[in-house]
Length: 322
Image (cartoon, rainbow, N blue to C red; front, side, top):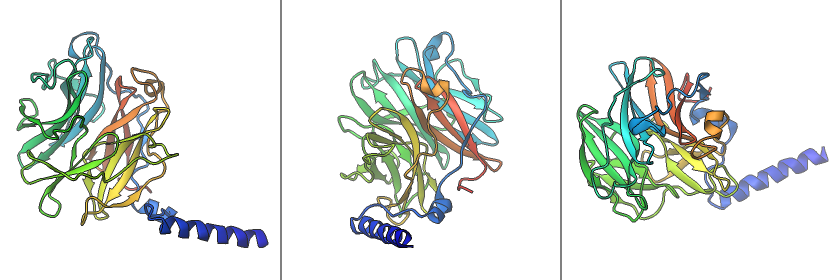
């Protein structure tokens, strides 16, 4: 009895100390079940897409973004040729698993800020009749977050660099206005936020809204994943985090709809991590990098890059953990 009482006292003190330090909200099991996405189960025949022998995707295909239109899955994905230059390819599927690829890329490096490295890591959102594609423009030594628009997913108009910092990438646009403005999370060391009235010109808040955490799976870097999902509970952002051993795993955080800079809840454990050969071995080993999330006929499809080499899929029957 004495040991039990001491344990309860210790637990109470720990909770009180944690709250007193202003840390992120303590997550009880009930709270986790209320909002945590998943569980996601990896498709048994992963990877669903691998590089082809020659052409613009001879070296690798990875880090896809996906959108569903009239029951068809459209995947925009990063492809590397044998020189390591990245382009954006487009593929279609009726089941979300078997994709037919276009023979030519839909977005290629044409600007000086894209030469030598290319166009990387797309994320697409449709607002009204327009598709907005954020991507990383890489010139071989500096990454910059750029934007392109389209009405058919094939023909794209580039709008240039939208975050004119020395280094910026990974833009995930919330698919609806929040408090009258559009919101984008971006970054790959910390996660930052920017606001826009027209989805082209962005105002950055000069303080991160989320940082890395020592002794966690996201201790060294964090980067937005798929387009955020707006729910009754808040803005759900699935993100990618990596530790000091450069192992990439997938996490989840919930931001407030009233104040998109404020974290309501953040999982301590990843929702997806590298376990398969195609995720453990590749250009960058030990990587699952989620960048596409869609719902179709009651199933959630989470698409990710495996070891910077191929594309994998995990599914869940519900957005919320049950």
